[in-house]
Length: 475
Image (cartoon, rainbow, N blue to C red; front, side, top):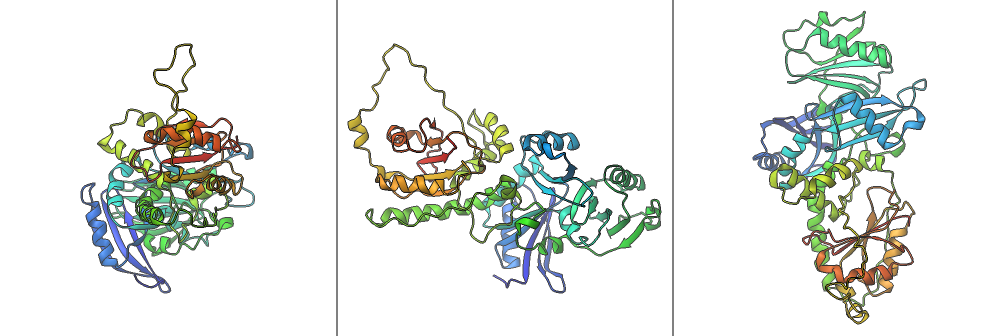
């Protein structure tokens, strides 16, 4: 792998992609290659890019043709996620339930209300590109839209400006500092009227743009024709690959751009799942009487920061996200579970793991067709054989670790712990494989100090790395 002064970038559009190594200092791009990709050959192209760039770690730059970036200001009382979703759908004119989207709170000026920077990824792009990324051995360090990468190169501008970047298609961006207000792509010939529409939109909704920055000029258009109300025109050589390479490590208090998305988590989860399988095999060989390891748990992070946060050096180990990979595959044509459609709409919006509730039987006077497990049967179950993962969905710091320690004291193998995708779970949820149904009753008893009435679901895939997934709620 090359030194830290070089960054490998994949810039992907609907049908083409560009790959290169970015050297900073005096920025330049090396090993610059262009490819045409399809759903069938993307994994092969990525493998070739890994070989040419001599690294498997890349930053992923999304063209505006495969995503959409919008900004909107909201009243302080309307910062709930549902309100933000409604506003995004109003601006974009499309439903976003069945795609991946994220948002971040931003402040572009002291005299302008706090706002939301949102990014929506095209569903068709996800269906076509995800199989190729998941099959390859690429490691995605961060994801960012083209417009935000270009805006970073103009972050010194204190007043609204417009960027014209012609790279087939032509992309026109309205921004202030490094916050994108709106972005548009033009497949056909870019016209002065298109520029005026963006200018007027920015002027009416925010402030009057003071400058046009021409990054790559559209063919057959005279630069002098761009003058709109005496705006300054500046030619500035900008390469979006350099823009994303210049992105600095995450600082929570200054983080105003899209970074990690669920799409990236799914890509990175493939390798994380393979590592977990290897670790589980090693754990099985260990002495069962070995002193339990110290269980550590990350401090809870708001869901917006999970979406926008800079990836850490340690890759996420959330094997249950493999289930999301499975659902995405179903959407792309391999579907064979009838409940997928219902759960996908609800859970992608919440950026959490899909869960299908199993109806609770209604007691009747009719004897059950088969007897309930007797206490003797429960006592004979091998707790040591269970592979359990505990996620903290309550927002109470360290709760997953406490639950794990209590199970270890009750002769369970050491569970893996982590945080759920959100901290608004009211009820504890126990998901299990159908083959492990016999353990539910004793597990409920062992968890009674933390949950008196958990929601039981036998929906965990039999191929999952874990037998039981427990999401700790507030009750």
